[in-house]
Amino acid sequence: MHTHSFPEITLLISHYNRSQSLARLVHLVDELGLEFGNIIVTDDGSRPEHVEKLQNLQREKGFTLLTVPKNMGMGHNFNKGQDAVKTEYTLFIEEDFVPNPSFVPALSKALSILKENPEMDIARFYAYFKYPYLRPIGDGFAEMQFSPFKAGYRKFFMYSDHPHLRRSTFFQKFGRFREDTRPDKTEYLMMMSFLHNKGKGVFFEAYQDLLTQSNSSEEPSTISREFWRQTDNIFVTAARNLYRHFKMNRDYLMGRK
Picture 1: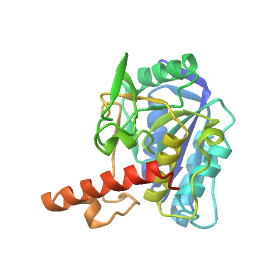
Picture 2: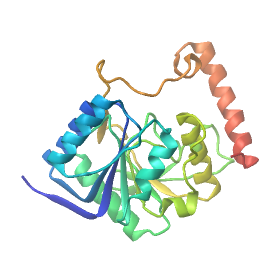
Picture 3: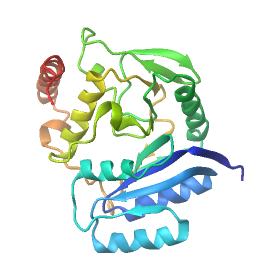
Picture 4: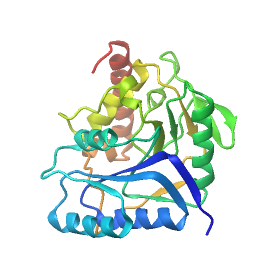
């Protein structure tokens, strides 16, 4: 098996009550021949049976395991994980993602982009939808281009908690994740901070080819969302899109935090 070494990168994996999914991800990293400067698993107070499995996996694989005695929230989990990173770059992945073989060359290219372009803050590998304003730069990547005057609300989604490579100095420019709010609001506030602080990044255009998000009935998603956020009802969808358009434009222009 060919080894792909990335000593400048720490793989930071967030985890909560899905030890089977985490084990799958860690083993796939090995199968793909990926080697990192460090692997950190940051756990958000999982149930004892999951913590026991994490500890067994840690003894097998030798990664750094960060735990807390009780659930402190997603923001705290992300913060404590990033605080432990010592390398120049951080590859952030939540435990329910499965990397495909094509992820390896894409990661190598993303690292080259960040090294060659110091103004770039992030390289995104996965999304639920394609970022609407892109300038192709080659090898499947495109630079995200934001302007408050561009149409639609999806222009605001430059930052996402989905798998991405970022500089480990991320907090110095964009601040820490908020710890006093629900997960979707935590992500939203970081997204707004990214925009307000003139963040720049690249996006892999085949945005669901590199990784697969896989949740089973045994280990479903740990994030629950209200009905209006998920339903495909045409009237609810139209109202939701209109609400997001006005809210995001207002929050950005007023500097809401």
